[in-house]
Image 1: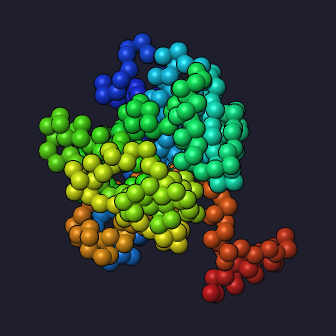
Image 2: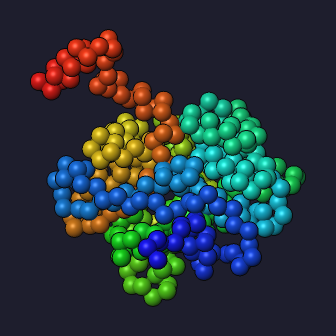
Image 3: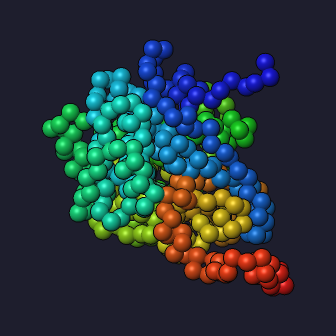
Length: 361
Ligand code: AN7
């Protein structure tokens, strides 16, 4: 057969490693199998001998890594007979929950902080038909409310406190190991609730246990300075950052994240908002890869830690780009004040003159 078999999503691919049965109805949108892109220009510009790869999770069906967890969480919710799911969200979880609920034919309730979610994510939650509850409060407050209401109403929580979310998300580590053929020395992620870093560590650890030596990297979690409870050593009550996806002060996977940091001999660190945005722009300009601000914390942090020697030369580094740049067009446009854009008359003369002037420098 000249054709390769069709990719039908991560549950189908990794069913031996996931809690599904042969007759489980799988709710999938073909998530996973995302590109692992080796950076050339960024690595060259640092002037150190390191290999940096980005795992472009923004190419999942709803544009973020959340789809990996959501395919599992919704599959299991439906299997258990649930008719409605609920989440609190800084945006991406709500988009994924809404999409997979639509796919399954069930209802999604999403609690989002009023005025603090990026436009693309809002558009998604609306289009996929979620019932959107904008709350006058932040993600952490929304999460508290979701936990309480789930005790009193027939709704299944699909935040990453749902263990099936972590199961689905661990498959990102499987893909990286399979594609590279080895484990990276360092794996860098942006951290909000710390569900994703926990899931990656679970994935690497399962490979490790199956006897593949050195299947585990050092895990590095980067937070935005205004929302960095792991750096403060305690919960942060009023988190603030331009990277609204990780505007989280009370991480739900606090203990697990500390445990994996120690076990993996990794660390947490923080980035100022301007450093996050600079990394986002650098990646787009020099590699043609557009991620959302929160995602760029992984690369921005990695570059800094390569430059300052915390990540030694010779290292192989994977940075997870958790969400697509198109999620947050406002922040992107805001930082391109001097984009190469001019308005001209629609004539050949004008177009030609503008191009030739531009080439002349
Ligand atoms: C792009 O959507 O928590 O450390 O409610 O959207 O697993 O929380 C989003 C989190 C990183 C942090 N990058 O992951 C939500 C939400 C992006 C994100 C994170 C999020 P976790």
